[in-house]
Length: 350
Image (cartoon, rainbow, N blue to C red; front, top):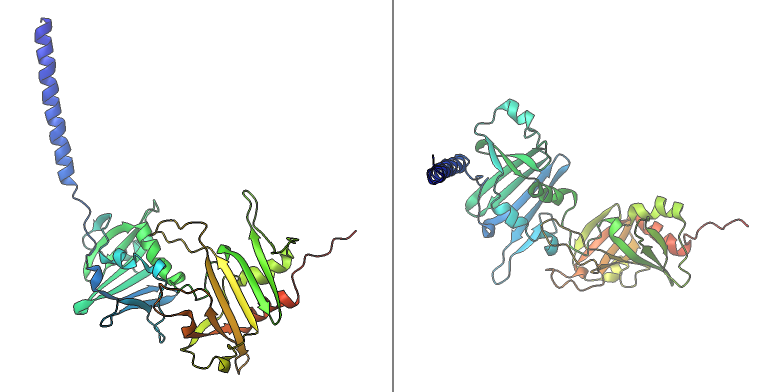
């Protein structure tokens, strides 16, 4: 066989092999259909959302007024507005999640137990216009920890949904999107705070060093460190907000009634904004400022009247002066004691 014949045969076999490889590739692609949509809905049609976990439930609704932009609020007696920055993207996530994969066409009772959807870690009830409703139940994580098993009422199938989707929605129950003036934050985000009690005041600052634990100190010329034992036992546990904080009344016509015309105690805190997975990472230099003014003690002695003031939150539908809070007695007295009995470090023995 001469060289020319050999070359022709090699080219012919290469073309045939390429044809079969292409055919096999097309067949494989056709045999694996794209992941189905778990459900679809128009984002503008969502009116109410309820998140339920084994620890409780929390609901939100969209208020639609003629001549005004729609506003999302907590589904409570006060209709408290949400933190619009943290809420952004939630309705988009709920408008039409695409599943990773359809696992089972007909879910049996034993399958519900196996995949954890018989006792869901999170259930989401989405109410739409036209009296439509979508209910989904999030089960266990997959072994690779990347996805969740998920089911939908009136649909017998079992699907996989992206783990981030489930994590973001689950956070709505354990870390609700309170407005910026509602003092429930992550205490590790606090950078600086001041307590004013009577005619005196004291300020504290968090120092952060790479490779070292954070250090709290007095904010002043001497930069004296605080008593670390007292700080860890009394201050750090409540730095993210009072253990008992709730709304008492919407609207204040007479501040003197609650001792808020001249509050004896004022707490001002600066902290990093929360990071939400569905948003871009916030600028680390950005800080939120929150001020709580504490008035009279309640008649039953359980706590104090309080009001949030300070920064003008222009992106919120109500101003910070619109609500009267209940703040527990222990929080107020612990913070006031930082002024009357400063947490100075123990004296060093000579």
